[in-house]
Image (cartoon, rainbow, N blue to C red; front, side, top):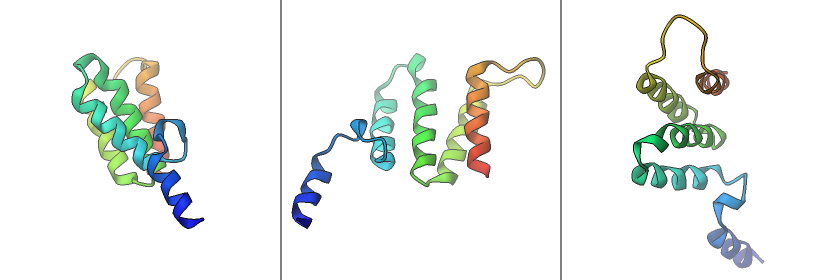
Length: 95
């Protein structure tokens, strides 16, 4: 039975299993490496979220802060919804 479970784990697609966050983060990191610039922001957000869910809090914080820095958020005026989502995940990471 142990061997069977190990075999299942080795062959499962992380994209189909919401609780395999470490493997999902690795898969997203591979996609980031090959992604065109216009897809980098959303992929990096997903990557940071998966890192956080995998328990890699410090890595998630570093990625989110780097993403915010790259976006160049203004200190005045309303915050766009996409940026607000980044701040919300960052707030959870700091908890």
